[in-house]
Length: 131
Image (cartoon, rainbow, N blue to C red):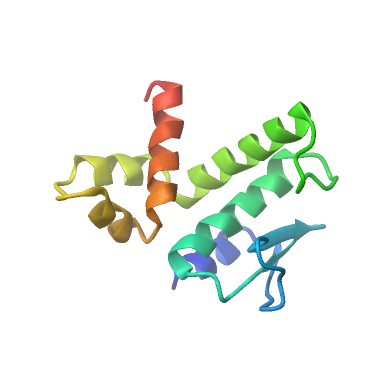
């Protein structure tokens, strides 16, 4: 079972729809608990973005915040991203990865099946929380 299938299994209240016609710059979108995602986006990037979209459904109000025009919308976006990071890469998994020996961050990201930006975002989240 791949990471997207695991998300589908763990979040059955959401419908996950692969849609290759998603606009460039919008790899995934949650609309009324339907998560549309672009299958052309690299796997190690898209599955964590899908987790973020679940975060939007679980943590934000039901309005369009894609443009992020207000401080409240920025806060909602950050909350959804943090939620997505937590469900995509649970703390114990991340801690185990950090305590393993890797020559560089690329190897750790590859082991977690994420891109380097997501690895650094996850580390930043834990640093912010003092973990």
